Length: 215
Image (tube, rainbow, N blue to C red; front, side, top):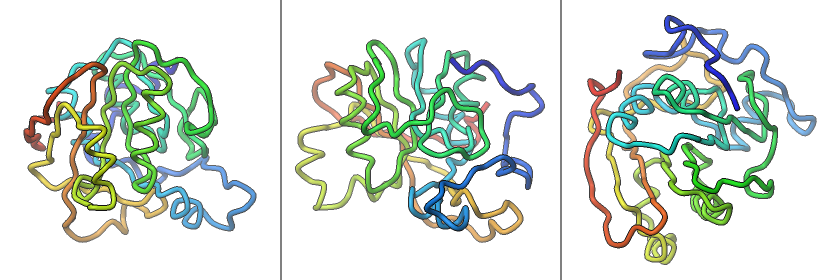
């Protein structure tokens, strides 16, 4: 399990330093980190959103982030006192417990929470896989458009979440390879956390989280 890797002063309140991808490794089939990030749909969760959700949702003691990327969710969960395992199919320079494709890799998640921001096009498959592996709870960050599409209507009818937490303040979620100094402009995309709990019936209940809730 990943231990607390950073001192309190190193934890992100806005964004990590410009050296955020130092140590990142390219897979052989890619020429650049941009190409790799585009292929795997790697977008960094705004740290305030990661911190704020943990003020309204209680996770299980053991947590897995199966697509940890640059470590935003792992750091937030460690800071909140959880025992967190960090996995990813790529090495983005953040310490991982396993390099694996969550959709094909076996891991026993009995009684655990999956806390994640998966690729948009595979988000439903990540949720399905979490419960196939016997997860107790899934807390998933995505663009709110994920909930709106008619293409996913049947999936949502089969998998209604217990709760949806809409980001009342816009969350700025930039692709990994874009350097902080180049992350300009105001975000115009709504994001939300979608929460499932094994055995839950009914729902969803919709609430909001705000930037000033982040601790």
